[in-house]
Structure formats: structure tokens, C-alpha cells
Length: 349
Image (cartoon, rainbow, N blue to C red; front, side):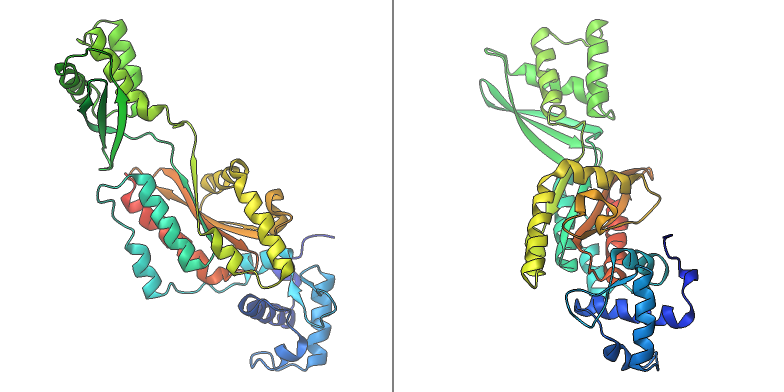
């Protein structure tokens, strides 16, 4: 059977289907014909509504759980509703203000800013929040070395986007204090404006060509100072998940609880989840994955709403979104995710 399209439904079927899905997403309960008959826009008898619901069920858009007389949308029905029938809600001013409050870096690490934004989105949506942190191609503004002991120093990296990161580096035995100054001066004079990977490549070239004007010990300090950041898995994306407890709070019965337990197990398999979010990053805009459309969530019956966010060069660098049950308030959450992505685009440099 071919996938139903909006055009396959007559006006009466569209009205019944739209109201039923709206009611289901609000209550989470199967919706009966008597309930729908009381809704003003329909003006149909329960018998007429039952006939329409039967037709929608035959199309694969509705299902009848357990022995209930009510119907609920299938994942196919939810997809049809989200893509072609849903009326997008306006973002609540208070929600908008909370999202905008995340629009500042204030010297924080970018991972911390993204983590806070994800936690905020999780709280607003009552789902788990997800963010894919961009690969660490930070450009260097300045590096300083502060001695901590004869064998250790604090390397301080100030990125072009204003974030500040500190790492402890080991120093060669017996190294004179002036070597730290020499190493910092070289980085700030010769490597500022480059990304960490570019800076490492430039250092290798200049050392081979004897243009680095660094002694052997200072070269080792510069190499360690750059390597302490680039060795942290910067060739891969980092996935941050916040608000998993919200998923448990949404579980209303034993079946829901089992579904959430499966989802929490799936969230532990972050590699697969990263692949899904990377699909969203490669998309043109908002991405919505509903239930078994993705094999990772075929058992837990979960949905992901995700949007890519860009840097100052208008280049997509990451993805932020939420994951929750398929019974989401899509009309409310989609604008929320979209606006959060746009706010992040203002602060990612």
C-alpha cells in the first residue's frame, strides 16, 4: 500500500484527523468518536465520525490500542500531521526570554555554553536535550604559560571567540623560567589567528626549515602547549545530553516506563545518536525523526526534533534538539528548538 498523502483525504477526513491528533497530543489518551463529536468545528454525529475513523485506520493513519473504543495516530499518521497539517504555535514570550538569556559567552568554554543551552531547552520542553558540539577548530588569539612548579605549568588558551581554557602541561626537568616566555611569545607572534591543527602544522614546517627560532626545550613546550588541546579527541563531535530524568517523569504506565528504559539504553549508545544528529546537520533546516523512521528508536517509540546552528561565517557547525516520546507537542517544541539554534548562531564565532 502506498503512503497516504494529504490529497488522499477529503475535507471531512482531514478535519476529523486533525482534531483527533490535536486531542491525542494534548491528553496522551486514545480519542473516541463521542469526544470528537463534542468539538464545535466538526458538527458531526458520533456514528459519522466512527465511519471516518475507520477509513483513516484502513489507510494506516490511526490505530486502536488494547480494547479501547478510541483511536490514536500511528507514526505514519504523526508524520502526515507534522508535515502537512500542523499549525505551528507562537513561541511564548517567557520561553523566548529564557532562550535569549543563553545568548552570551562571558568567558565560558563554548562546551559549557552549549551544555547550559541544552539543559534550558530540556527544561522548557520536558524532554531530554541534545547538542552536538562542533569539532574543535578554535582559532588562537593568545596563549600564556603560568608556572605552577618546576615540572608543571598552566597553559591558558584564549580563542578568537572569547572563550578561555586552562590545561596543566608537564615541563622538562631543569627548564629555565624564561623558556615559558619564549614559547608563549612564539605562539602569539607566529601562530595567532590559526586553528590548533593549523598551528601544529605551521610549527612542524618552521622547525624543519629552522625558522622557528626556538631552542629544543622551547619547541617541546610549544608542542605540549598545543597538543594538550588537540589530543582531546578534537577530530570527533562531542554529544551532550541533558534532562534524561524528564523522560521518566513523562512515563504514565508500565508500558511507557519500559519504553523510556529502552530509550535511556539507546542514549548510552551515543555513537549511533551522533549519526542521527549528523544527518540533521547535513539537512537544509529543521529535522524531525518520528519513531521507527530511524532504526535506533524502533523499539522505544521516540522522536527527535533537531536544528543545525551556524557560526559567524554562516557555516553549520553543530546541532541542537530534543528527544522525547512520539506524543510530543510538536507545534510548541519545534519553534523552541529553532529559536535556540538561532540564538546559538549569534554566539558561536
